[in-house]
Amino acid sequence: MADGPTSAAQSPPATVPAAPAGAPPAFGTAPAVGPEVSPATFLEAERLVAVSLTESERAQAAGNWRNSLAPVYERRTGPKKVAIESSVAPWSRWDCALPGTEPGPATNRFVTSRMDAGPLPSKDEDIAFAQVTQLSQWIETRKLTSERLTTIYLARLKKFDSTLHCVITLTEELALAQAKQADAEIAAGHYRGPLHGIPWGSKDLLDTAGIHTTYGAEPFRNRIPSADATVVERLHASGAVLVAKLSMGALALNDIWFGGETLNPWLLEEGSSGSSAGPGSATAAGLVGFSIGSETGGSIVSPSMRCGLTGLRPTFGRVPRTGAMTLCWSLDKLGPMTRGVEDSLLVLQAITGPDVHDVSCVPSKLAFDAHADVKGLRVGYIPAWMKEAPATEVDRAALEMVKKLGMTAVPVSLPDWPYASLNVILFAEAAAAFEEITLDREIDSLKMQVPDAWPNLFRQSRFLSAVDFVQADRLRRKVAMEMGRVMSEVDVLLVPSLRDDILNITNATGHPSLTLRAGFVEVSEARSDWAPDPARPLAKFSPPRRVPHGITLIGRLFDEGTLGEVGMALEATFNVAKERPSGF
Image (cartoon, rainbow, N blue to C red; front, side, top):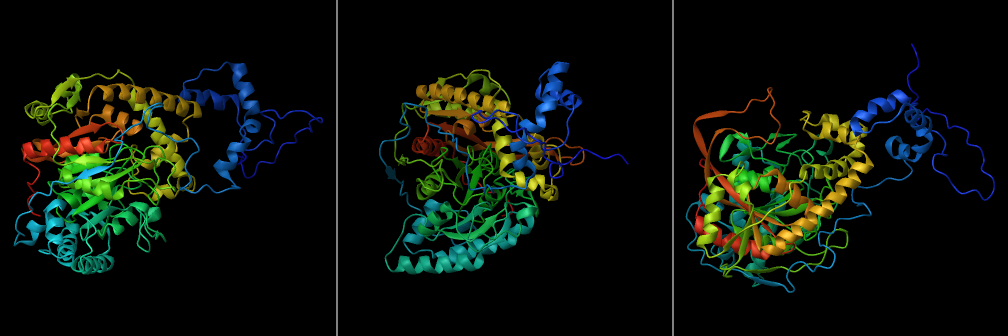
């Protein structure tokens, strides 16, 4: 049998002639490493990178490749001289504020509605579906104990998880201890605020000391961190009660994890959408008071849409990600998923603020007034987007509602640019974050191995070029400048929630978004995050099924308060937020 190409580990170093004294270093003079390559290797590679070389250029590139790329092979194949932990962010970081601008409010101001929560319901399920604004009043006035509320949610999590597959780890012992502590503090007159005693669930990418944090992925299913994530610490400090680590699509993609597919309580024939699948499902089914999700490219917006929730994706850099799984250093964001708009602002207030351990986290102010008058605010929209899919009659009705509330609808435009090419940044950063399990083949243990799942995407991303990444990063700057122009013309932007363009744009630029239920639509086929696959046919419905549909508001950088004010006005007018999925 003929010998195959020499591996990087086996390849003997080539002899490099000693340079004369005083000679400067030169590229391409390192000892040769890695497999032998030929001009034919480059001929095939040209198809991947859309470059055309002449025969002599291919020969020159092949002859010098092993000397030029020697330092790269140390990272690719080892033995590695230095470990780069996932907590180490790249030196270059994304700053969503354009040069010369001071985004967000100048001062903090937080005014809640303090609306009367009404009498405590007699049925546990009615208590479970109440919004945080109600639950907190009942607890503060001691009409309801945290221990009773926690027991209600723990029982519901146990009862309905076999249907929804939304729980990875139930934190019962911790929850009951925290609930008893909350009740004792409140009885002693030490009320910490609106989250005190409120049970919540965490997407299973936030570290919890001594409790499994699995990323929903087989290689990490036995992982137990030693410290809490910063967001977990802040919610503990607020007096909130952690009842469950909720499911997420493996490594933050879609809604399938090592325990199966998390389902939509409104339509059990489909997934709840991802990757904040568990937070979406559990919050919609009344299994937690609120939850924390994350978004890199749509993972708060999409499950909030499908499960009929309010999802608040904060400005990039507002909420620290220390102790959270890294998918993309310059794109990841943590935010609340709730059953009401004001609830999402209450949670945001508890978790906002800089953290020295997250280099992308910046000081910011939060100004929100639940009683603010929205009349006169400018709501931008892109006319063509409102006329075509994925916009629906619900989206178009929301635009008309904006006008009825005294706000001004302002048509705006964005250039017709290839926004999907910004995904080069997502793919490159994600492949770097999970390089180790890609190269050692642990990625092969993930349940989903279809073309649009991470295993294939991580492997493909090894073939992206550094030039591709830099050009995508430069396009990102241009897109941010265009969004700066648009947002200077309006106070908020109303968009179809799942339009690819706006998800790509605003996740790249870092603008905050608020998704809220605005009505209902009928679907004749189950929906999926995955590319069409004949091996996994989707259920069809005749007659069609009625499911919730949401709209999304985009805010100016660090101006989540205005988002909340407009969202509350629309929510009250729509009057559809309190309808529940049947069977729960």
